[in-house]
Length: 54
Image (cartoon, rainbow, N blue to C red):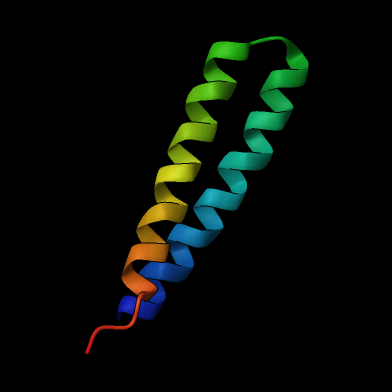
């Protein structure tokens, strides 16, 4: 179950990053920055969940 959730989070982070680049090219810098921050938060959550625990 957690593998599915992590996969969805990773795909969403990639899509948010691509969407941020697209929106930035259209000229809306604030929305692009917010999308990049959301993607970074998702990637950080995945990194935290994947850290091995004893």
